[in-house]
Length: 160
Image 1: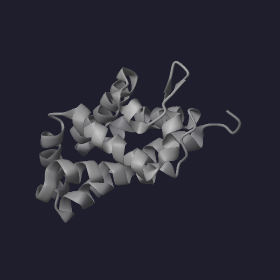
Image 2: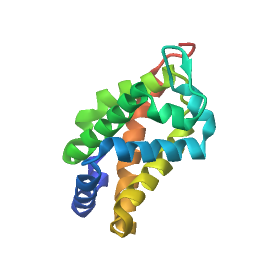
Image 3: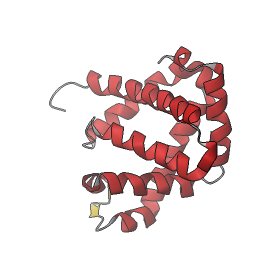
Image 4: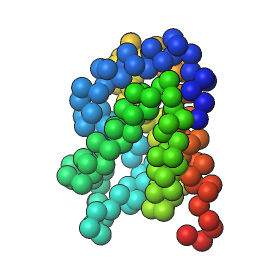
């Protein structure tokens, strides 16, 4: 993972914006996932708990198990923000996360939709403070995280 891809100014923008988002992770994470399901409703069936299929995004978003998933996603983002100077230290964790996503049926193409949803959530939370420079910085960070997850994906043998 290339932390050098982010300039000092970009790291500062990410940290500054994240401080506002991290105060209410479940609320903002729900915005991210609501947007994700709006953009790609076919992702909803990937979220099953105890073999229960959710009938709607609203049902999924209100399930305690899904709220736990939201917290975990926000913690991954938080870890990336907290390690902006040393993103490679997250490599193994993110590779394993990629393997887990592949195992449950997530398609690589879905990562771009998740990225769009992340940017939407940040803009929704930050308003005018989510300037073009902040958007670019977050896009670079997200791309670095996804690249590491894809390396875990690529390492998984075929047929598993």
